[in-house]
Image 1: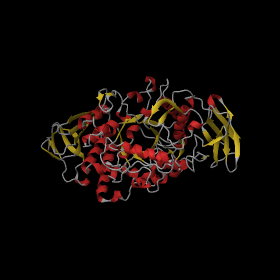
Image 2: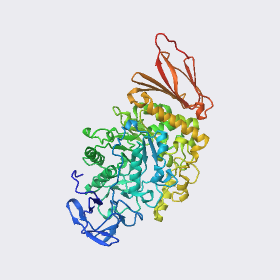
Image 3: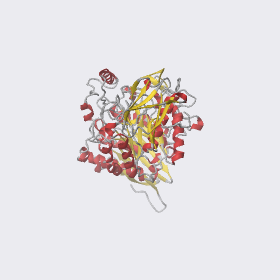
Image 4: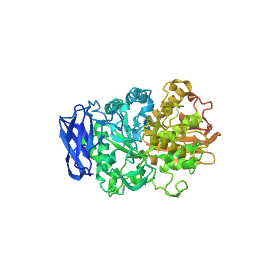
Length: 614
C-alpha cells in the first residue's frame, strides 16, 4: 500500500468541500451523478487507476451513483446505503461531537469481552438497544464488547458476514451516526469496542466491485468463489481499499479493536502480507492520534507467525481466537465427538491448551489428514482469546443450541470457571451469563431466489457430520431471526438470576484477585487425570498461590492438598448460592469435590506458631 494518502476513498466531507475518489483502473470515464439536485461531476484520472474530483455541489445526505463507462453503480466505498445494497449510495458527514477525549483503552490483559449481534441483542434490533443496556454490561463486569459485523448487507437480517459495502454501517441498525453514538457511550462507561470485520471475502448479493476493477481474482479457489485479489495483477486497489477501511473504523468511529474474520482464508503471497499492511496502517494512525488500537485475528492455522512482530516477518496481530481451547473444553464437558470434535481428548487436551495454547503443535490431525500446527512457546497468554461458546460455536449448530440447552447448570458453571481462570483473554457470548435458552440460529434476508435456494441447500448439507435426523431451520424465514432475539425478561427468573449472579462473582474474581488479574502462562502449572476427568491448576504469582480443581467427571472426586499452607475457598461452583445442592467440602487436608464442579482455593503460608487446620 502506498504510504502517502492522496485522499480517503469514496465520497467524503473534508472541511467545506467534498472529496470524491474511486478506483476503476480500466474505466474510460467516471462520473459522480448526484440526485435532488441532479448534478454530474466529472472525475479526473490519476495514477494507478484512481479517479478524483473535489466539489461543493454535493452535500451530506445526498444520494449518488458512480457512472462507469455509462453504467450506474453504488459507490464501493459508500458510507451509507439507505435503500439497500442495490440502490444509490448516500453522502455521510462522519464528523461527530465526541466526548471520549479522556478515554484510555485498557490493555488486552484487562479485557473481559462480551460478544453480541446488534440485530438480536435487543428487541429494537439496533445500536440504541445496546446503548440502553450498557449499565447492565458495566455491572456485569464487562470491559469490552465485540460487535459482529455491521458492514451493509442485503435486507435487515444477517449475521453480517455477507456484507458487500465495507465502509457503510448497516442502515437498519442506525447507520454511521448510530454506531458513533454507541462507541461514545461505551467509552463513557469505560467499555472498549471491538468490531468484527471481514476481509477474506465479500457477500454475493449487491456486490458491484468487479464493475469497477479487479478487486477479485480467479488465481485461487475459495468457498465463496473468486478470491479477494491481494497478490494478483492490480492488487494495489483492494489493498488500499482494505487498509483505508481499517483506518476509517479507528479514525472516524473510534473503534478500539478490530476482530479480523477467518484470516486463514486470506490468500496472499505478496512480499508484504495484507495483514502486515493493516498492522502498519494501524501503527501509523496510533502515532498520529496517540490512541491505542488492537488487531485480533480469527485463525485456525496454529501458526504463531500471525502473532509474531513485523521485525520477525510476522503478521503482528495483537491476539487471536483460540478455538482449540473451546474444542477441548467442550469434549471434557461431554460434547459428543463428532466433526472437528472427534480428535480432541477432553481434559488431557484441555491441560495442554492451558499450558501451550495450541493443542495441535505439529502432530498428526485426523480431521485435517495432515501434520498440523506449531508451538506457541514465547507467545504471552494475553495474545489468545478463550471462550466456552461464541456466535460460531452456537450458531453453526443445526438448531443453534447454547450451552444452557446442552449442559447441566453445574457444567455451565464449571466451563465458565475454566475460561475465566485461564491465562487468556476471556470472552462471553451474549445471554450466556444468565443461561439464556434462546437459540442463536443462522439467518439471512436475501432477495435473489437462486441465492436463497443455495443458502438453504448449503445449510442442510453442512450438518451431515454433526446431526442425524431433523429439519434445518430456514435461514430466510423471519421466524428464524425472531427466535434468536434475546429475551431480557428471562434473566430475572430465579434459575437464570442465580446463573447471572454466579457470572458476576466469577468476573469480579478475575478482575480483582492479584493472581488472576496478573495471570501469565508461566505462572500456571497444570496436571490432569484423564481417567477420572479431573484437572488441577496451580497458580503462583507475587508470592501468592491459588489452586483450581476442576472435576468434569460424573462422580465425586477427592484431592489431597499441600500441607505446607492453610487453605480457604475463593469460589466454588457448587455453592448453594447458585442452586447447587452439594458444595465442596474441605476435611483433614482433603478436598471432596462433587461431580461436574470446580473450586478455586487460596493458600497462605503456615508460620512457626500456627498449625494446619482442616
